[in-house]
Amino acid sequence: MTILEFTAIVAIVSFVAGLLGSLTGLGGGVVLVPLLTTFFHVDIRYAIGASLVSVIATSSGAAASYVREGFSNIRIGMFLEIATTFGALLGAFLATRIPTSALAIIFGAVLLYSAFVSRKPRPPAQRSLPPDPLATRLRLNGKFPDEEGQRAYNVQRVPTGFSLMFGAGALSGLLGIGSGAVKVLAMDQAMQIPFKVSTTTSNFMIGVTAAASAGIYLSRGYVDPGLAMPVMLGVLGGSLLGSRILVKAETQSLRLVFSVVILVLGLQMLYKGIWGNI
Amino acid sequence: MPARLLKPFQPQPWRDRRIEIILGNALRAGVLLSAAVVLCGACVYLSRHAHEPTDYRVFRGEPSEYRTIPGVIRSVMNGRGRGLIQLGLLLLIATPIARVVLSIVGFAIERDRMYVAFTLIVLAVLLYSLLGSGIGL
Image (cartoon, rainbow over all chains, first blue to last red; front, side, top):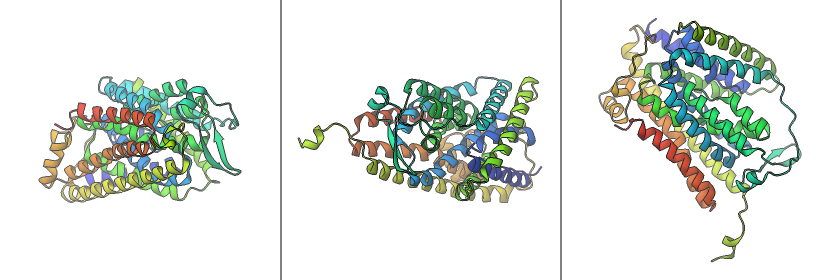
């Protein structure tokens, strides 16, 4: 394949991944690394470097439109970023020390878990939970616009959420992804943050988390300009388009298709990791 | 001391929101700028190397001109397309860092000392990772 063909095909695939990731809310980065390693025979380290860069682009590019809706909570975001950035440092440190087959196995497991989380019905939002003393002291509780005007929420189980976010940061630094699935576990389930607040806040955090490991990746020579260029431009274009044409009715079937894709790619990564042909 | 400074802390949603909107727009501007630089680099790179074969099967690691800030700047000066792409990617990495710096200012305006401290911790981790990685060498 010549450089022109390779660039064009990778840009188109990245555009579709960014578009689907944005429409389904599952993130485009998670499918890119397996696609690049499986179909384009890219070494997993180059793939992770390119994906990490695209994660910063989509997170920062979408921030402005999310902010206007008034759901994100900058205090929750900043407090949890302490955990995710330390985690990302650990992840990037480990990434250069563990074999690529182990990286593929961990990646496969995260993909399977993401597919599982995306199919699980979301528990109905708990209303009027009592305020947690620690969350109150940290000023994490907030309000967001609802059908009935402003709805207040009280953040729960701060230490559990904080520890899980450290794990999310470590996975992001290790695999070059946004690790949305772990964030759902930490913010939606442990901390009981309303869905819209947690998705927009975590989007805000993903860019900072990825920036904490991106410098390490770049300085280690994992970010190849010829590969990162079509991936970053493609994913960014796709996700910006996706945030404009967000059609609520269609997303159910799209989510199903996308989670099947994630499942298949996860099994493939596990297979490649275990049989060592990566 | 004015009386309002003695009152307990009250979160002010409209101020938070104004800060967030400024931050969101700054982030979008940073991303669009870096995408434009990457696109310029892509044109130069593709106009010169379009018909060469690709090979990413074997990990070799990038040469130092694409791994460090002075190296990238030197290769941009030499008119390298890939240098320009890496410069765009460096701008992209700098964008969330700039957001963190702006947040410190925002929390300081609100006189929220606790969150100024939290944000400084995040900034310290980001700078440690960048400078400790040897990217500046």
